Length: 188
Image (cartoon, rainbow, N blue to C red):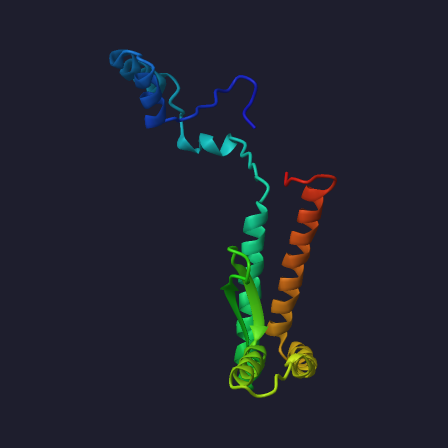
C-alpha cells in the first residue's frame, strides 16, 4: 500500500479525453492537462505500480450460468460413460425437447434403450397390435444401468471424478437456488 505522502497515479487514457470532450471541455486544456500529468507525476521507475493494492470484486453468478455449468459437467460425465460403456443401448444422450402443451424447450437426458422401447411400443400401437407399455422394461434396464454406472465409477477414477464434480456443481446450484428463493416468490 502506498505511503502517506506518495501519489497514486491512475491512467484513464482515451476514456478521460473522450469524457472531457463530450462535456465540452476545450481540447487545448485537455492536451495541456494530459501533458502536465505526465510530467508532474511521472514516477521515477515503472515498478511503482507494484505498490498499488489490487481489489477484486466478484459478482454473484446467475442461476442461468450455474445451470449451464451443470450441463457442461453432466455432458463430460456422460461422454466419458458412453466411451467406457460397450453396450450402445445404454449410452446416455442429452437433447432439448419441447414437451406437449408447452413452448418452452427443456433439457432431457436419457439412455438410448428408453427411446428404443418407446419407439417399438408406438410402432406396435400404430400397426394395430396390442399396446405394450414399455414401463416395466424401462425399469428393468434402469437397474442394469445403475449397476453399470456404479461398476465403472469403481473401476475408472476419471469417471468417478466426473460424477463427483457433477454432484458438487449440482449441489451448489440447488443451495444457491434455495437461498435466493427463500421466503420469496422472485429470484434475488
